[in-house]
Image (cartoon, rainbow, N blue to C red; front, side, top):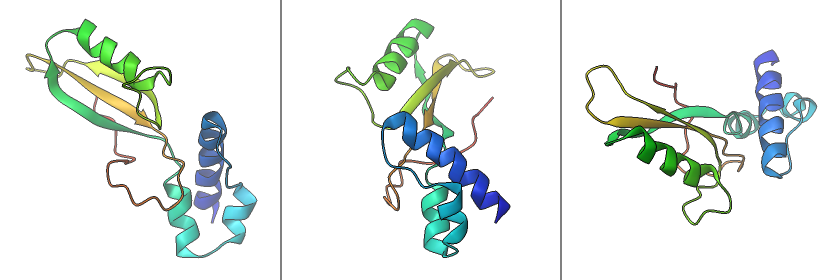
Amino acid sequence: MEKLSKLAVSGAVCAAFLGFGAVTAAQATAAGSPAAARATVRQVPGWEVYYEDWFYSAASCEARGNAIVNPGSSQHIPGALDYDCWLGSGDARWSMSILWCDCRADGGDARWSTGARRS
């Protein structure tokens, strides 16, 4: 249950940042059902490789990253909080990871993940 409480707190911070209602740690702990646990886990932000070996320059990667996280951009993706452009060892082109915060409970959208960030 301690793990669920920590996940709920992270989810609450994420939801507050995006302006959504949040599940509190007390609510997550009190709701001991597996569905409540899944909803809490989906609220935890996580890094995901979004473009791999895609951009020809750091500048083009940065421009796309700025558009993705900027709510005023037509290329904005809801739930994208931050991005990181990187050049992998031996790669000719730049890649981008995105920090996701999908605060929709039980959304079921497989595109949103809490995958580990590639270093």
